[in-house]
Length: 190
Ligand SMILES: C[S@@+](CC[C@H](N)C(=O)[O-])C[C@H]1O[C@@H](n2cnc3c(N)ncnc32)[C@H](O)[C@@H]1O
Image 1 (cartoon, rainbow, N blue to C red):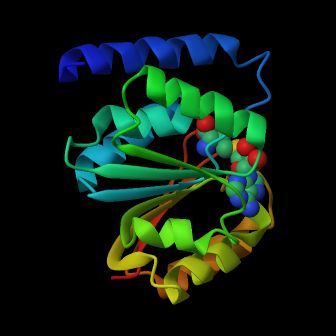
Image 2 (cartoon, rainbow, N blue to C red):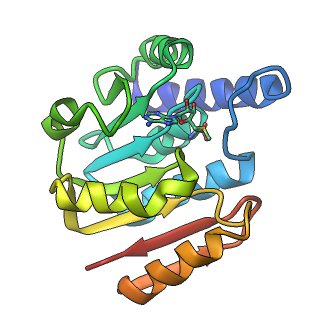
């Protein structure tokens, strides 16, 4: 499938998933957040993207929409049904050569995650109360490059996230809260 046709197909699928949101238990980012995520991928032009929490692949598709042909995206989902449906969708959109879709608990599938590491852009959208632990795990396992850009979702959804933001702000070289819908925190330690 040529690039332009593929982009059109991705957008069509995103529109379809958006319409299905009420019936799907997907906990996906909003349309606006998806567009923002896509812009962030355009801005940083990462070579290796990691997503924790694929769900039905909505945010994955937004990142795939703007990633370059030479980039790859690894995405991990623990729920078999959501994993299978997203994998099928990536295959249908001929994205399977650039999207490595993995099933499992990302704390437990280090070998598979390592195959595509080090990642230079990480979108974290699972296990929100354990974000600090997740980031520490990625850094101490050398799964991320030193200049990796992290994007975390659901920053505005609970007051306990304030402590997370404070901690990251004190350690990161840059840290921005993008206050759109559930809120993204974008930061890097380089
Ligand atoms: C908020 S949803 C992700 C939404 C998706 N990023 C989107 O915007 O379209 C979180 C997903 O993370 C998955 N998840 C939770 N814990 C996980 C773990 N330890 N490893 C892999 N996936 C996990 C859940 O099953 C759920 O589908």
